[in-house]
Length: 173
Image (cartoon, rainbow, N blue to C red; front, side, top):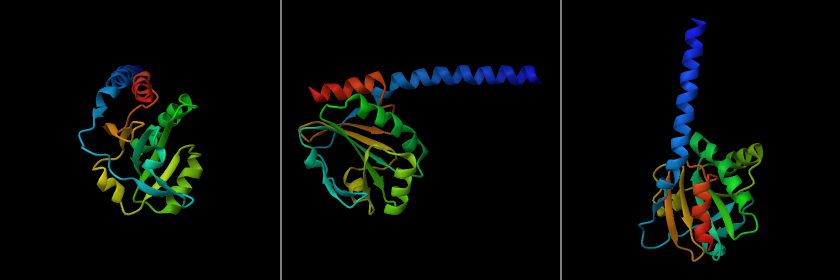
């Protein structure tokens, strides 16, 4: 039985590696050009109660990410968004994490526990999520410096992948 278990573990590891390589290549194919005519409104408060509006970030490329603390794929992709923001430090780029309908205390506890280095906004009534037509978490949107949504992504993505970074960098030009 131990030989069978070792063989099974080896198979699972090999399959996981191949799937992971395929997923990294397929990530940017998931960046779908935005089909909406106009950029939806986004005006929310952060965890400290300070107001933020998307128009405040005009001149910057913005990654708007809708997420929830209970959403495992949401939590999994946050590290790659932090790496992306670190990689683009000094460039006009910002990540806005829009929490989907959870209480300020719960979100604040999560942000402290995870030591999030990204700006967290609260959407308690999910008004922003409706305006942005979010139906699945996570959902992300890349907004160009002129304030127009350029790409949408449904589901988890590796934002620190070479392809993702290149896509963001094309918007920074």
